[in-house]
Length: 135
Length: 122
Image: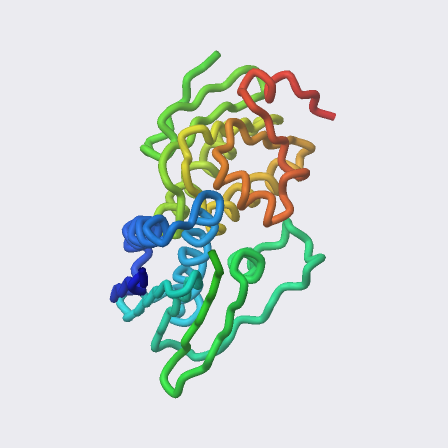
């Protein structure tokens, strides 16, 4: 029996008030894909952190700019893309031994540690972030 | 023991016991409400100047790095005067974030408020 690929598409603004509802949608989607905890919680955290970074860094704190999330699940691979139309700069990665009391960078650490792959692809008008995790 | 006014639903209960402040935090904490948490937490610290801050996070099922940054700011403020911050009753997803951020050995992590209040302050 072939299992049809699943897809989640969300279009939202960069308002942090949207984060909770996006987390619920991603949680429900990853649960339907078969991800157990703690993996499910890790994926939810990663999406939240990536969206927060878009608000803060790609959009300089603006709350009214567009963000598009697409999540697909096929052959055991979850792929999540986040598209923004912001500054188009990929974030610099914090050193592994950075002082944990210094602010900033934890979100990106979460992305790198909790997803199997992450890739920032600059667009002519923003950024495409692609993250993958295998079930 | 004195009950403290917190003026925010994020901190539904707060009390002072000697030089310790014990706060219950409630709800999912993210970039949307972490600024509010910061305002009220720092206000409480400025008003009470405790040597020990106990944050009961049993009612926090989720926290992101912006909220964690608020806790770190409170910790750094306390450390300036030799104080300590204890995090109590961590839910699994919150504990996971604290471990990723390598803060598990910098905060005191306790199962209960009682355990946190029994910890010695240097």
